Length: 109
Length: 114
Image 1 (tube, one colour):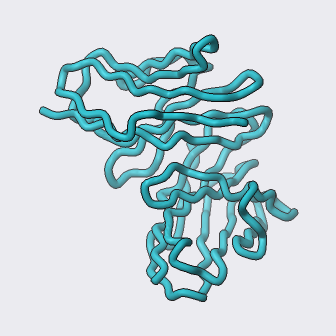
Image 2: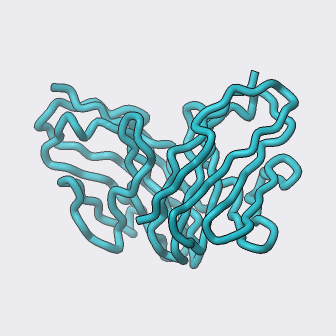
Image 3: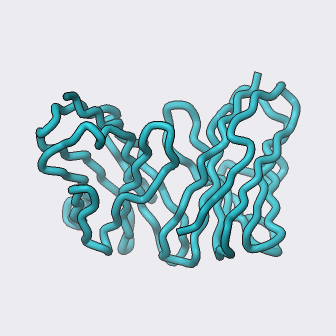
């Protein structure tokens, strides 16, 4: 079964501290993984996807097929990073996304 | 990127009534999806809105409860029928230009059923 697991509902860190938001997935084929972010009172938006291997707002995520993980990392958290982060998986040739339950990142001053 | 207008942004409805949510996109898109986000939970795909044909529903969702229309490549509606308090949720429209392309989300409709 296809599934995305985000074990942490809430992650609280201090400004300047490293951040790692965990995401594990279950999928039999070659998955496409994404991180979406929702800032307060804003719509859900794409942060990054693994095929782009890009860094957005200082965030990176590496797909680890051996561990079936796609953890989101940032070396130094900023207060403006406080938001809800969702890991998502896209299967096959469709555009359907399967979302994790989300992690609320709270960056304290 | 696609600009998505979703209406209404919120509504409070009585049990047993129906609400139709509209999703308008500023450009033609191949794929349109409807998601539900129940309180404290993640986004769950309801259905894929297919232009010119019936929507494709995910397990646990049926056409009688969530009828969907997609008359053209820029517009879709989702109706939540015969509502109960369990239907209280955020409903989101999502669009994509093609398979394996980026998906964009509307701002959502927050529905409360009394």
